[in-house]
Image (cartoon, rainbow, N blue to C red; front, top):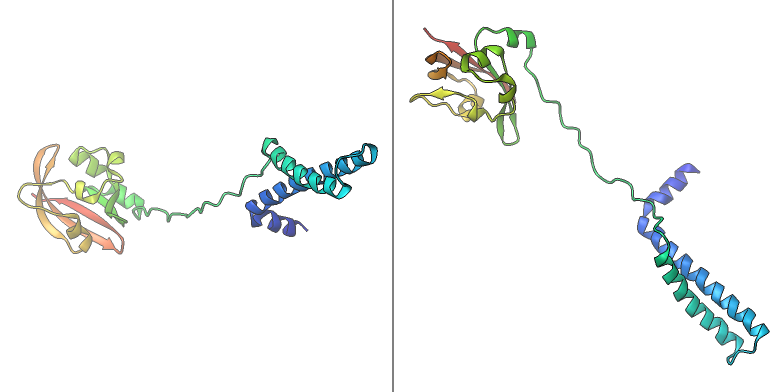
Length: 197
């Protein structure tokens, strides 16, 4: 029984509203028609009983419809029809202890809708480049490469894989040379900054 009532209630809120209006019109019509028919038995009306009943139906139906407008709104709210999509969990660097404990700067990126985004950097990255590690997360990879001088590296070169280049980068100790290498696997990858002497 509960399945049937749930199905009927959830089918169409507009149908329920229409049935309510029709019900109010019917109640008003029947009430006024009955009142005029009873009045006709007590007092002689200037028109026939059939006209009195018809007039009662017409006027009573209009009265019932208008009364419906002044009744407090008791409609039930329609069920929430939003769709919830579970977003896939953002991947994190694996193994985390090796990533965090690596002595050289390491950046972890994930290819997302509009391009690769930095998802994590290790402590050495933050110390070497004087970057708060929690603030760089979510930054587009193109803004986090920190390459200076004439050498340029763009995000497409990093995500294409096989990057192995020596570049200059601004660090807390001044300009230093680093060997940039990528280690990628599908949509995620690491960018390793190995200091060159």
